[in-house]
Amino acid sequence: MPIERIFLATEPGAALIETAHIRVVAGAGIEGDRYFNAKEEPGQNLTLVEAEAIEDFNAKFGTRHGLSSTRRNLVTRGIRLDSLVGKEFSAGSVRLRGVELCEPCRGLGTALATAAVSRAAAVRYLAHRAGIRADILTSGTIAVGAEITPYSADSRIAFRPLQEADLSLLTDWLNRPHVLEWWGGGDAASSIETTRRKYLPRVDEASTVKPYIAVLADEPLGFIQSYVALDCGDGWWKEERDPGVHGIDQFIGDSERLGRGLGTAMVNAFVGRLFEEPGITRIQADPAPANARAIRCYVKAGFRPAGRVTTPDGPALLMVIERAEAIK
Image 1 (cartoon, helix red, strand yellow):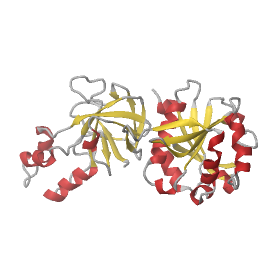
Image 2 (cartoon, one colour):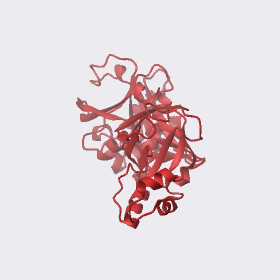
Image 3 (cartoon, one colour):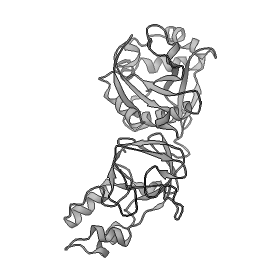
Image 4 (spheres, one colour):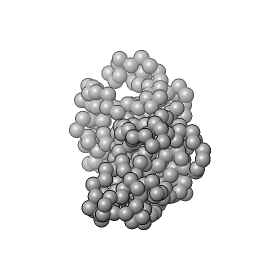
């Protein structure tokens, strides 16, 4: 359910500008957009429309309108936006609330009308399908490719510190093929004893590595940990001098939950949690260059590639999200 295109206009009626990312401010809108800090109507912070609605219009009337034709800010694919009205959801690491349907107006009908399609027909066809208005709840950056992830009472992801009682579950996860393929350079735990030796010391408050079990609807979802890059040792991040740089590693425990956007949602939630600490300046991850699934997950969560690196586990793609990119 990614964001496919992003547009803004600097003045009312001005030509739209397409961009790969936007900076948004909670309660105010998109920096540089015509409606920044506008308060005349609810939901003026941000507008969204489904790519499929525009494509269906073209198929119905034989037109060739582009995805910018509705003048909405975000063009999404694969999600029914009307289902988000009255609910909270995320766009990458930014939290939003759907306010109301952005119903087609006379101006939009005029813009879409042709010799064969009247303004009234265009407005009628797009009724209830012309997008939604949303309020911005947290400041940050929204980029093309970021996931639209709905929140609901039973789908919020929480994190609890790893406990000794979790070691059996963690051992099971570490030996599953989809985890074993990429985790720890392929050197996954083969017994609870090896898991205990490696992970139990990280439970100590003095450890610079902080492991967690991610929980979805009261059920364990996956494993995620953060660490201070400067203090890694063992050949990791030897050139790092900034104590505010934290790294993360993560995986979904059950292979049947892959490909459902849960990894992105987990990373989004964890990144937001980490940046609540004022001393953290950057968060990084280092998936293997061939681990396309993990790379897509981080991109959708707002990370950007920063180049290939060599780690003690082998080649990796360094991916980062700066504090300034995530928090205003």
